[in-house]
Length: 177
Image 1: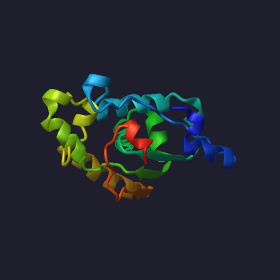
Image 2: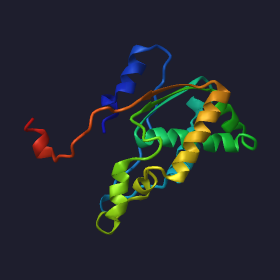
Image 3: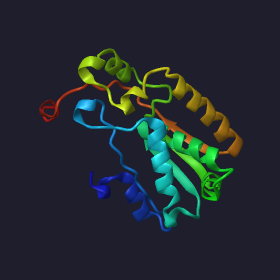
């Protein structure tokens, strides 16, 4: 996607002193049409990417993540907290986190991932899809960890959910409505 079309970039244009960074990654549903890392591996990569950015060494941090991105944020924060005793950059990073916004994040998994699992012979779910199974013990553990950690640290968070079901349709159907 064109980064100029992402709404967070518009905030940086409107608010003086605000810098916006976007982290993109592949998260294909099926192994047939791409690859995707498992959640903990993805988060480790993202954390290392963030910790080496000179522009992110100081200042308050606010995260916003949509869907899987919200889970990546939680896992990044957990990884940073785990590394904070041995890595000064990780300690500084978590001490500067102030707010997190979750936009349609499947905190305890997604039913759609379950369909991928049930049809795994045909769909060949990616690692990202497999890590989104509803009531997955890792997601439950991550969710409980984040609740305790954010409360202890006084992290403000906003959780926005989708309340209307979305139908799956192809691009030609989308243009007809």
